[in-house]
Length: 336
Image 1 (cartoon, rainbow, N blue to C red):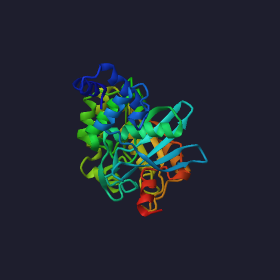
Image 2 (tube, helix red, strand yellow):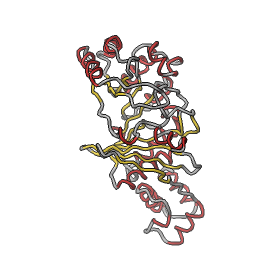
Image 3 (tube, one colour):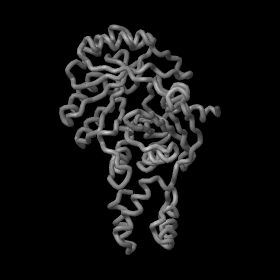
Image 4 (cartoon, helix red, strand yellow):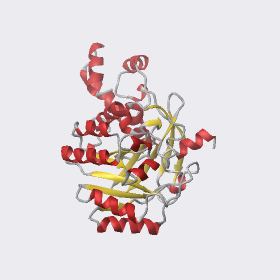
């Protein structure tokens, strides 16, 4: 609940307005029981316990990378389903990568998240709890959020927008929009809808190929929104918000990593106010696709840079703890 919603409920109960602020601040600290709200009268705490619920995620598994300190959490939801959250530690602060759905229906052929399809959307509170519970468990202050875990955020539009409002609240987690990145596989109407909200978050588009033939092999969504429509939507987003788009590009050996793909991508994006993140594919056993070699990735990056495109090669974090989207949940589903 938003502060104003809590205040309206409390007013109807005859409670003073400042009590709503107290409760919301406690929620922002990640408490799991009203009894932890020590500055509330005992009778009020009991009354709130009877009237409201504070569902909380339960940690099923926690893995820590020996290589870089990245931590991955498998959380059980109140209905027994599970999602993953990844904590990445950087010099500039701690970033948490959260899930937005249980499973995914987008069907990208290189991704473990979509195996088994979509089960359901996460609620705003469940996404918020991913952030809060991860911070508490790791004793880490969260400064950045990435919606790039299990699920397609723009396929859960209303819940994700409510989550963004909640996590942005000054009396709550107080994480500014410029510290939040949202990733999408390219749902054009939803991108336009998001642009109309003029949020100052960073939009990351999972592109993975510059042409329809290759992208359709990797991402079924391209059959609905071809690359031309997607590029046009990205241009509208940039013109409307002034926010540069980040294009994610997973390098798949022999599929999308040729000089032809690099030159075409550079031609498409030159001068488009965008940035390309190259990522060596995370291997998923069920998919059988292999990551490009480091030499191929470097050559691809150089081709883009020579073509006038801003490009970085993302450092792989947590590779020793199944840190790619959906791998830990998939292991639980297999019973491993």
